[in-house]
Structures are given as C-alpha cells and as structure tokens.
Image (cartoon, rainbow, N blue to C red):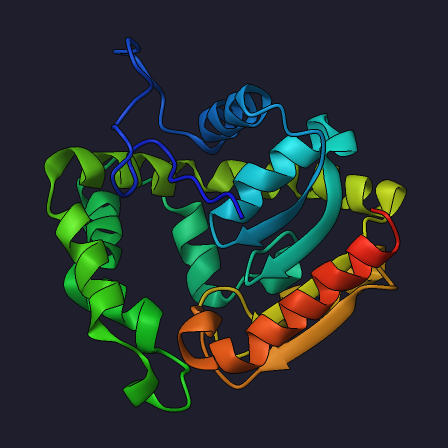
Length: 237
C-alpha cells in the first residue's frame, strides 16, 4: 500500500522543492501525485479515493486510464446528486471576501473538524479524539491553513470536472467497490448510488456512520477491501 500525503498535508513539505509559486489547487495536486506515480514506476494500481482524494485521483485517471486496475471509492463524490445543501453552499462560496473566508475558517476550526468527524456516527465512542486533534495540530500552522483555504476556494472547479470523470467511468468500467457512510453531512448517500449509473457492476456497501467511515466501521470495511483486492488478483488484474 502506498499512501503519500499531498503538499501542505501531514509531514509533507508545503510545496514541491524549489517551487515558490506553487498553486494549491486540485489540478496542481493531481500533477504532483502523477509525477510521484511515475517516479515510482507504477504501471497500474487500485486507486483508493476518499474525500479530496476523489478530485485528485479522478483527474489522474481521466488523463491516464491505463494506470487504474480498480477503484475503491469511500465518500468521494463525483456527481451533483451527492452534494448536500451544505456542500453546495461551500462549493459556491467565493471564499476570497471576508465573509467567505470566515466560513471556510469555521470548517478548519476544531469545532468544524469535529463536525466532520462526529456528525452521523452511530456511536461517538468509536471515534478517537486523536484523529481530529492531529488535524487541528497541523491546521494551527499558518502555512497548512493557507494551503487548505486555497483548496476550499478551488473546490468548485471539481464540479466542472464531474462530466469528464463520469465519461471516464462509463467508457473504462474499472472494477469498483463503493463504501459509503450514509450520514455524511457533506457527501450524501445519493452520491454513492449515482456511481451505479456509470458502473452498474460495482459493489455498493452502505454503512450506518458518517464521513470518516473507517473510524467507526473498520472491522466491517477492511475485510471487504481485502476480498475485493483478492478477487482482482485472482483474475490477473
């Protein structure tokens, strides 16, 4: 399993080495990760797309479909039907004025992060505070916060990409497993169901939890992933 952080996330440096003008956009992140893939000489792989990983991974997949041996999609949206009213609101925010910036900063506050972790979960006792406290630790660093604000302002560009990603799914029909926390306050269950329009043979598993489904349902989800990967391996993909 290969799981890099994006520039500006986790312990990864804020921008690629020597690039003082790096643009924090989903397009830029996709190019960095595409270079990372090529640097490792990865011929093909199963793409795990979660949250922001959807817009990054799907951009790469649409450009380089030969790389994608399969898809695991977990609360990563690619359809307008999957956007909650709140998600629509944030996607349409200008975000460059004081009012919009304040709303985005609210999402990046500890209360905003906890909202994303805890909303819709069946039992909050399964949600370790370590997850949202670690997120908050990084977002207290000004450079990390600035990078995330740029991505939130850029999120609306993903909506224009939806038809491109859907066309890729429809034409390529990669083997796919869809895992979805049905009470996600931003990416609603309709977004999971929408994938079946273009991937009618995909597995769909819905869980009684929120956005970070693995936090509460890892004991259910991990065996499903292992079985899916095992089947791909047995067919030579």
